[in-house]
Image (tube, rainbow, N blue to C red; front, side, top):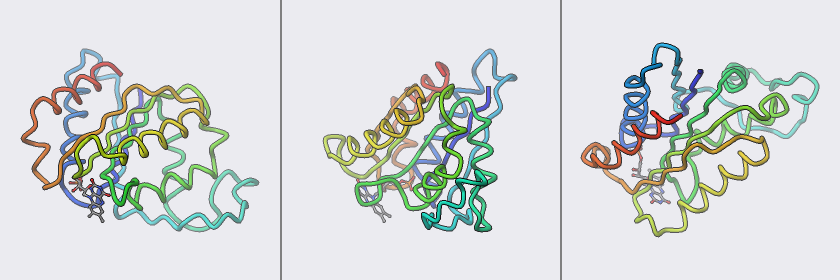
Length: 180
Ligand SMILES: Cc1cc2nc3c(=O)[nH]c(=O)nc-3n(C[C@H](O)[C@H](O)[C@H](O)COP(=O)(O)O)c2cc1C
């Protein structure tokens, strides 16, 4: 099983802590040796924003020189995609959105046979509409691409070390990884 995890955060904080918990959960599985986990740090990737030129329709890749073809090949090969992102202005981070927009170049090859998990982390309490908005966005993408949602977790945490102190949530993330 190939698991591809997107880290949408530019800092070493709560999202990274969540990803580490997921990785620990995978490592603890009896079949861990058969699972390949790759983390894509969206911060630092060179992604030119989609220009809607539609040239990718002929080539199944962006015609502009950036890191998106390599990322899209990894998405195509993955059995499980995990999107982990902080909330920035009621949405996913710009770094992650740039990557998702480039799915457009290869979306027809992504359809079906994948599970996804989402981890959305914001400062606001969980009653805030932002979590529903972002999880709904992922649910729509999954529906469009015929992906199954394995888990959709929203977390309230703000300072970089907040989530590290939340043992119950970390245990829950490990459980999600165990059940993939
Ligand atoms: C530019 C920016 C915008 C943010 N917007 C929101 C927001 O709309 N709602 C919210 O709850 N938190 C917001 N936050 C707080 C982060 O989501 C929060 O600190 C989160 O824990 C960061 O995750 P990280 O530690 O993985 O980077 C924002 C933070 C930044 C830097």
